[in-house]
Length: 381
Image (cartoon, rainbow, N blue to C red; front, side, top):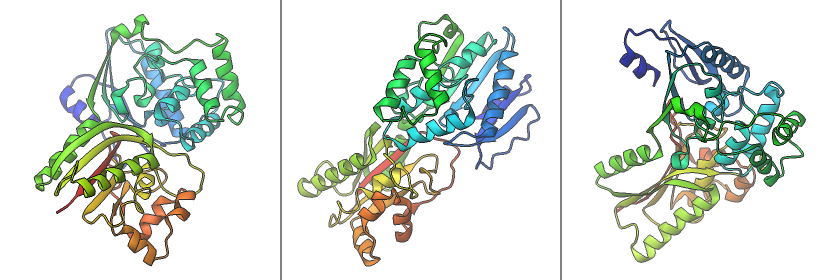
């Protein structure tokens, strides 16, 4: 995004900040750009330094200047900017608790917005520029602006009360860091200003545009499959459910197609897009895509010609080096030959190692962009 923007802007006077994932090989040689490589999904010290640089830069801008924000998913972690009364360790701890729960991205970001100096539109509060333009790549189902990167340049419709409710709903309130609880309570009592709301006049100078999203990736997947002469339909780009539930849905569609010849005839495919959640109870390796795939292994046994593929468009699935996994009707047969029991890996949240032993992981490496996840259900000839 930055390379394209600099090419379009040409020789205009530009100063900028690039914040990229720590594992990114991207290097910025343009002297006008300061580069930071911070951590995802848990924030780190480099993210703190990047946040400080952003805050200092936008606060020093003039009314006749334009701030161009190039935003994609992941900025919630890479620009943590915790409030002054919260430490980085506090932010890491509560983020990890939320990720390991069944909380949705909306719920996770509701909490993060209320613990940040930048999120939930607070970036706009600090920025002195007369015009703010955000070009946004969405990794959130429904393209809710306040949830993409926790809404750096978007109004926040949620409140401190909502953030507290999320932690209580998943039994995280008592175990959350003490400073986090104190900050949220102070906000609830009105001692800390709320995040700016949709009616706030400061957003009159803000122009947010979504330039790519999960539907974009779904359309690309459909085009590739159709080039292989496989009739393909997009079912949804707004998946929002537990990984195991999506696995059951995919297999139920496959079984109906086998029995009734619909909705999948031969050869044809269905594309699903969005993002699932996982309640992490084990200490294994994996992520929501491989969890989804693992939930289908036993269910599609005997459905010859059926293949299910699940993948993260950023090339990273959870805490594993894989993007996802592939399952077919013979996966369980091969697993039994290797004495691999699905349940043993499921209870440990160790989906990555199950598929690694079958050599069925999808490994792409980081792709450099993120528009959520893609799930393919293919019924071959």
